[in-house]
Length: 214
Image 1 (tube, rainbow, N blue to C red):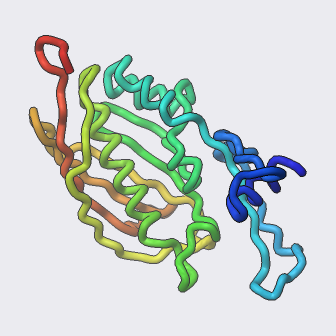
Image 2 (image 1 turned 90 degrees about the vertical axis):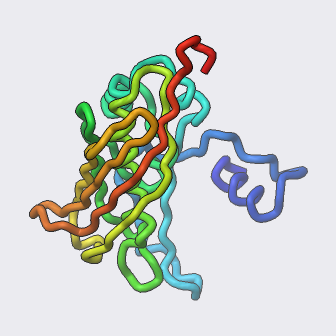
């Protein structure tokens, strides 16, 4: 029994004799590789079968790297691949394209696995992109040892996305950076620069104590 079938069997039937629990790291493709949608697969009667597989890195290792450098350096390490991307990027298939002080840009190519029941990209995918761009923009402003928590995300959906829309870009920037809170704005646009959605996000900033005790 190969690893992929063991993972499926364990998810359906539970771990046990003949169905050992799957490993933490899944077999699959790296982010950015093409995702196979096999339209030639036999019809089971429940619709054409699509398949997508991917792998991710241990999120604890990624999180452990964050306190070792300031926010801008950490974001640059993520963008340049020196620190692996968090699992959410692999799951949704988007990438951190670039960062600058007070700004971050993510890119995504819409795919079928992003769809809602009515044939377009789910609003949660929009929100994930906008939240990531706004939050990472705030993160670039933080000193070493500080971190942020999102307090809210206010999204305006303007246009639908489908696989025919082509690549989209989500750019976030800091509007205000205070001692305890920050406000950031993010915009989602297509290749022609058409605005698809926008959002604002308030973030709570937690800074290390002067004594170094956290």
